[in-house]
Amino acid sequence: MNRRASQAPAAPLLCIDAVGKDYTATVLDGITLALNAGEVLALTGENGAGKSTLSKIVCGLESATRGGMRLAGETYAPASRREAERLGVRMVMQELGLVPTLTVAENLLMGRLPHRAGWLRRDALHTAARAQLAKIGLDSIDPATPVSQLGIGQQQMVEIARNLQDDTRILVLDEPTAMLTPRETSYLFDQIARLTARGVAIVYVSHRLEELRRIADRVAVLRDGRLVDARPMAGMSEDDLVQRMVGRSVSDLEHRPRRAAGPMVMSAQGIGRGTAVQDVSLELRAGEVFGIAGLVGSGRTELVRLLFGADRADRGSVTLHPDPDTAEGAAPRVLQRGFASPMQAIAAGVGLVTEDRKSQGLLLGQSIRINATLSDLSTISRAGWLQRAKENRLVQGFVQTLGIRCRSPEQPVGTLSGGNQQKVVFARWLHREGRVLLLDEPTRGVDVGARAELYGELDRMAASGRALLMVSSDLRELMAMADRIGVMSAGRLVAVFERGQWSEQSLLAAAFSEPGGREAPGHSSSSSPATV
Image (cartoon, rainbow, N blue to C red):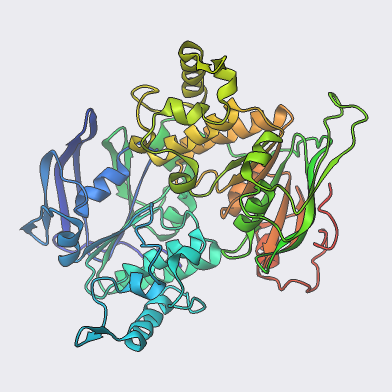
């Protein structure tokens, strides 16, 4: 989709005037900004810059401490999300708001379920839901499916579809493509073009700078709770945006050399579970990053869960290979159907950074300190007693090494920004030394500055001899970080590319290919292990 030339109306649709927000500290200060009907305003900045807080104030989820807003010339101060939606202001949040026990259709039409004499009209419900899903290219999803059975990427698409209402005047999208693949992102951009064509204003919050340059008319950059710049997107380069966001340049890693592959650490042979993961074989080697690409629903997350023992495989095996430096002559350990549980995987030196940090990766009500050291309490205790001084020193080191923005290590993780929460997850696996780290969307919702810091930590892990497997929906990220990239399609590993052999086009072609179809030159098939 080509970005339209911005044509601002005579009067802005939304005016934000000197808005500020204080908690224990000031998180927004003096934000003055206008939003025009029919335009896409990109809102960007580092994690913790205030983007989500400002978006929540606009959409009624938070109230401003000072300042005010006007909507179409009228005073606008929504006391709740429902009130904002009644006025046509909607938000797709980064953290999903779906009810997992309800069906897709019930989530889509919540609050306006079709009924007659108190009885739900399921045929009408499913017909309306299908029409809503079709707007975002989700024709393949059965509206009767419980949301809990969908992958996180499909849930994200359902959340977006839920907010594409005919009465929408302003739509705020907070990291809407963080879990989407290029095809789903394309559907979303097509829908954004339709909305803006009929005068809907879009606030697009994202760290994916190439997306912002593709669809935005203007860009507003926040840093440390203040508006740094607001200007037309035309002529802005990614380097310009990065400089405004973080105040420094961030290196491009796409053309880096391949890391030297060390000895094999862990391998899988014909691992599978139903049709979700079908007979995948691969090898993970010390000192390298093995990337996994694929469309939503291709089996990427399901494969990671099998390798970690979070789900039990019904066929195949996982082999742990001994460290030749410390266990010379030891035999490989073969686990039929893989690990029996995550605890067994962790004990064997395998860690996991999950795709959903809030529900699966963190104890949100607990402190940074507790979350960071939870993976290995034995190293900070003696005779069953916790050594708080040693724990505090370790956690302070993690905070400094990873650049975690916080008041103190005792701050509850749930009060941190998404990127800083992700850094706490990384701290946990820095604390527990292991040989393999599985990473499922490790930079989801993480800004460009924090992402560069996490990339640096992955480099250090690989240099120390860890084997890393990294799942990402962002092909540019995989192309920058991986030494090999495997592509999943319909539960199978259909291709493996070496660094220097891939292109974005070849990776996408493999992702869209039918398993069992012809191979593209330069990669191996899933019928044999993904070897170096």
